[in-house]
Amino acid sequence: LLHTIFPPELRFALLKLFNRVFNCFSSYCYFDITEIDGVNTNELYNAVQLYLSSSASITSGTRLSLTRALNSSAFTFGLSNNDRLVDEFRGATAFWEHCVMQRQSQSLSWRFLPEEKRGFTLRIKKKHKSLILDSYLNHIMSRAEEIRRRNQDRLLYTNSRGGSIDSRGHHPWESVPFKHPSTFDTLAMDPVKKAEIMADLGEFATGQSFYQKTGRAWKRGYLLYGPPGTGKSSMIAAMSNFLGYDVYDLELSEVSSNSELRKLLMKTSSKSIIVIEDIDCSINLANRRKKSMGIGRFESGFNNADVLGDGDGGGAGGGNSTITLSGLLNFTDGLWSCCGSERIFVFTTNHIDKLDPALLRSGRMDMHIFMSYCSVAALEILLTNYLGLEMSELDDELVSEIEDLIDKAEMTPADVSEVLIKNRRKKGRAVADLLDALRGRVEKRKGEGFKEKNNGDVEEQEKRALEMPVGDCDSDHVLEKFGKKDESNQVEEFNLMTS
Ligand SMILES: Nc1ncnc2c1ncn2[C@@H]1O[C@H](COP(=O)(O)OP(=O)(O)OP(=O)(O)O)[C@@H](O)[C@H]1O
Image (cartoon, rainbow, N blue to C red):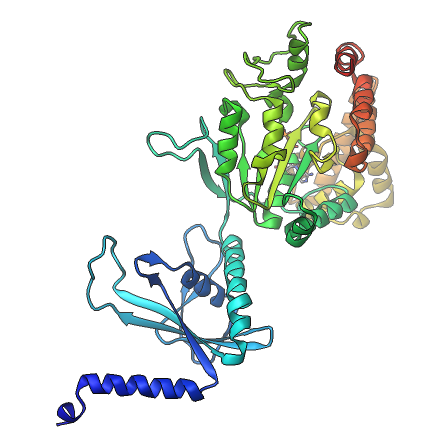
């Protein structure tokens, strides 16, 4: 009888009418965000899920499912049917409900759809509608991206031959989870310098509006230089862990031309650190200069590029590579470096004197970071990290002997950690071994007439020249500095360059 008096069509029409009247008088409005929009995945649904699973407050009695995604180092919770969460945004309250319905049938679609139809319903006050639509949803998208990055382990990419996707569909960048444990806490270096670098990175990562306002590309370059074992790779890992950026370790010898380099760059993602290690071994600048001027023999062991591109080019160390310095500079500086944003370029070298001044010039590498031999400040950090020991716990006499020896010994943090790690369970033994190692090194260097120390002096000059504001670091200064390093070849070479 009920069916005859109220046929389904009439019931549906009444329900619709009721809804309309209800909506007119209600102070709320509703938005549905379904998981699948037609046949496309709705990015907003995934973002809302991720965002709510870590940001919104859980109402009591809510039952949530916990998840830990592959490659992820954090737990998030998922929402079941009709779970409700409340979120606040700039004084507005957003009520979220998760709705799950069984899908009736697999409609005609080229793509398999999940059996459940999932979606969120967002309820907000009508007066907050524009705030929510203009800002809240964008806020959710960017927060979700951030959470995804933080939860996900960093990835370390390396390039295989070529810059394009090959015939077998292999991407030119291959990745592995990057689990390097180095952080700024574990990094042994001068605390003031460390704080400066961290502040610089922090400013960069949060500086979107600054870069927009000044019309600068949102990227930054760091040159790490210093002897092997002073922590250049550890610094890159610490940067990656600090910012939550992936690392692209660019193997230049695998790249055969400037255009390949450009293609590789195009396939890197934003929020990443692009690293070229031992840049002096990758780009053969000295020989290029001589060759381009048609004089001099190629004395170093580099396998020179046959094609040198243009006058500003230098061949990459690899076999048939035609990468030029200008190609590399375009990679970091030119229009192509801006395809994407929030990118950090890091070059490392053990021999800053081998680098072309063009690479060091103002604006190329924004910060030059000298990774030095182990200093007292760095040793304090290593003692705490490896032995859980404060310098203040040591005898005054012992401390003053260490302070006296440490600079003369020129031990790298890698050398010092090797000594400490051997006896990490016997603190006294470890400190005694360290003292022996320091004395041994000083004696050895005395025997050699502190030859290396002379280099150290030059390094001090480099340090001073390169750590001044980069704008002041002109090529003349650099030439003069390098001219002092090795009287025989380098002076001639740089004279040629200036002429
Ligand atoms: N400044 C440092 N702070 C903490 N540990 C360090 C530091 N420098 C070196 N180490 C230790 O020595 C190891 C080797 O250092 P790392 O590879 O970072 O040096 P590097 O300067 O990059 O050397 P190379 O130029 O040979 O690549 C690290 O795994 C780390 O354990």
